Structure formats: structure tokens, C-alpha cells
Length: 70
Image 1 (cartoon, rainbow, N blue to C red):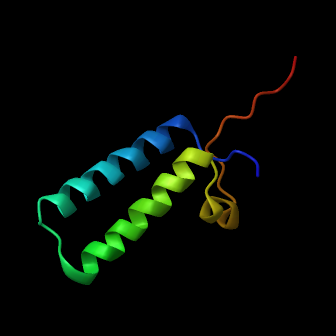
Image 2 (image 1 turned 135 degrees about the vertical axis):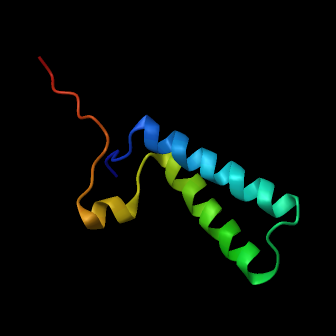
């Protein structure tokens, strides 16, 4: 897998995960919707750790700066 996410993408995803976790643990979101959000948070967490987003690949998006050798 080639890296296709920048550090900014990773930070944004981690912030979204933190917001979802806070909403869940404070009881703001409940029921099925809470479990859906937790699933989304899990996917975001996994993709931020591996620096690869399959959806980006399908859409042809690459936010990672490619270093060119001199």
C-alpha cells in the first residue's frame, strides 16, 4: 500500500475520532446511531495509523506529498 494521506488528514481524522468518543461517552449519542459512529471512528483510526485510505484510492485522491529524489 502506498501512502496517500498527509499529516493534516491524519490530524483531522484524530480530532473527529475524539469528538465521536466524547459524544458517545457523555451519552449525547445513543442506540444504533452511536454504534454506527463508533464504527466510522474505528475505520478512521485504522486508516490514520496506516496512512492509507481506500476511498482516496478509488477516487484518485492523494494528499501525501511525494518526495522526489535529487
